[in-house]
Image (cartoon, rainbow, N blue to C red; front, top):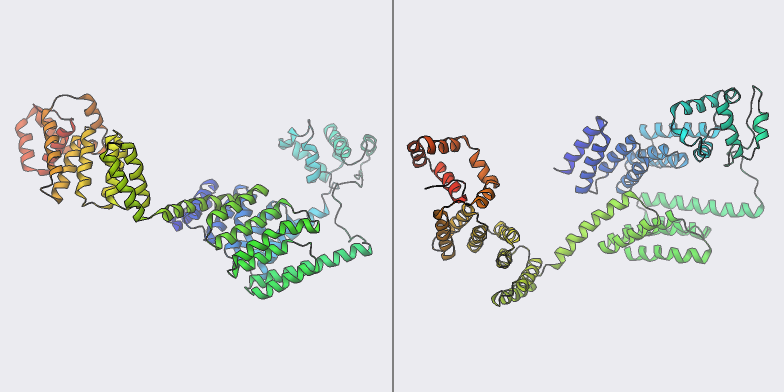
Length: 552
């Protein structure tokens, strides 16, 4: 199937809410065409529908990397971040999309929805935020209440307590829950017991994370640091905008301004590397990204695992720009050691397959293949068949489309009694050149030794059709016919033939079955059918040659 066919199949599965099947179909499409941004967009939607927001985010990000001016990629990324409750990042993703598509309805509605949810989350629940994410985490670690978080009835009671705090006082279990929560918030048991009136208000220490209120009052020194950082970030954002518009010189100037304002904002260097990659200066990109690690030590910056992964990913992208797949795989491996990413894992697998193809192609050298073949011939003449196999295999690797080399390898395998490998190589020889008579003769020899006389007979005949006086095929056919005429019951040979799909097809032919019955009940009719129909005669002869049909 083509990549487009897999995509359509995935769309059908997605509409039917068969998310795993949809993901698999989109993955097949990506494997065939990893540069199509639509495939990643569709798979992101399938992952999100399934509930795997992390994978949805990876595919959304990859979609943007492949086509940064496509609005839907930002919609996918924003939706995944929203699902992960990373509201600020989701808002940033939607706004980035609106910067390139200001009228896109999907981006507008997504932004409005996440802003609404964020405001609601910051406002806190009616119960004062007692049962927010951090408090749920507190309960999750409790030996008694942790298992109950999977109980729908218990969760409903928690939700009711949010809207009706009086329930905390009237329900002993909720009272105990309150004590557990307050214990993690700095409140003592007495505080929990005292909160007994109907107008209960939780203590002010609601959360370990401070609520977002007015900006804190900064010292003069702190304000200077903030101003420097803000100036650097503003210049970096300007550089990003230039980069998206492919204004590379302007982008580099803006990034330099960001670094000049704040030399500790080191990831700006990684942004510069992206520009150099686009400018076909991959070596410069690798050099400056690699320097980030040393610069971090010099200025006392501790890089996060995620930032380290981004640096290695940029280095990998630069190596790919140079068509150095092996170096790219190594860099991606370093990135995965810092922060694992499923999208990168899939990319590495595809690159490893590509590298194997490249190595195989780079190994091809017909001149060295001829030398290996000659060495193999010498070993063969000396009776050193393992040595011959080794050299013939080298010849095949050096010149894989050379039909005689495969035939030579088949001959060496035959001498060693490795019939299946011999047959595989001779069939490959004939795939490359159906007119190569020596290969037909060798195929007949292999089938003869495997006691597949019906097949060896056909192979020798095929060779004689191309070269009527070929002695190898003539002799092979004569010895095959002699074996067939010897007759005799051979259960092993007959059972082997019965497993042959071609023999099975002949035996399932209604006309042949009738002729076989006639041999028993009315031999004259059977003989007449064979005389009048060449096809019937050929099939009956094949059954005899295979040992399935015994003749007196």
